[in-house]
Length: 391
Image 1 (cartoon, rainbow, N blue to C red):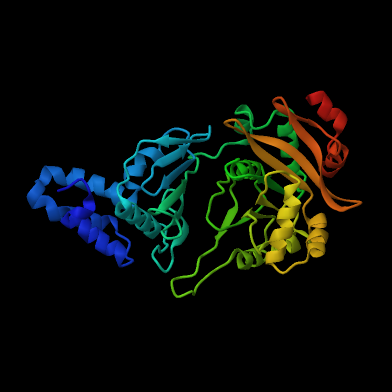
Image 2 (image 1 turned 30 degrees about the vertical axis):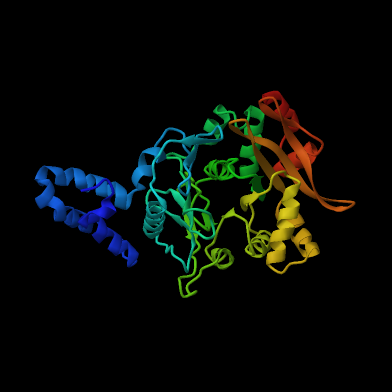
């Protein structure tokens, strides 16, 4: 038997199942391993079964990489190498994934495990693998050379706010403000660039929500790991190859409002669902939140304008809804290899329309007061004298 399972009778049988859109099962893998028993001997069947389990139900050669300490992202650039992020930026790692055909097989198999289909008619896929790893894969000709994969690795245990503070994400004063932001039930967004820790921070903050409250989370792909006893999760669904069966975030946000949420959470606001979210936050759903991709806190407003346009909303309509729906922006960034809260701002109207005024900005290892601090303190019901004494 060669080093590649697809070159054996076992591999050929498994690949035929996957190509036909049938997900292998524990039983079928065990049965297929017996196919080579006569050639390998019974002592080798157990080892073969274990290897096939990794190759079929895991990520194959990427399995050892996914469990490296601190790894948050694994990126396969076709046949041109594998890169990982352990918190200090991307670094190349020596992993032999194989030729273009092997990379494609890996991508298609992982898509099948995620309950998605990846082929010429559906060349992009976004899904969740067993165990919680988020998969994104793209096939040529949308990408050069061979299939490209992006794997986002969840933390085994979501960090608490205290643990994030110990790691330098925020200092003691900033930590108290974040906790007060949750307790005061003020609507907010966590904004930042790619890989800045938006989802991690939001999950940690939501874990501090009172246990009596019901959190309803709407996501494209499940990423938020919230340590809370009452979390309801809704996940969108892509259309099938016939273009049918799509369940959009817009629909799910609308449905979530009928599920009696105490906190409505949109994992990432990135499309026309922004209309339903803003409407919900303007009709009594306090404490709603989500993440949004924006490189600075000021960019959040332009981002909402762009998303509102996708929903057919004018700039004036977005501004009017946003001003009364979302009050606070928590901006995260990367300082070297560390993810930190760089600023907390408040959304308010000025002479030239909406703006985000900084209430706190990072200096040294903590947040310090900025021009809009009195406004934020008022929103959160903070006794500034007491906060000063505690800090």
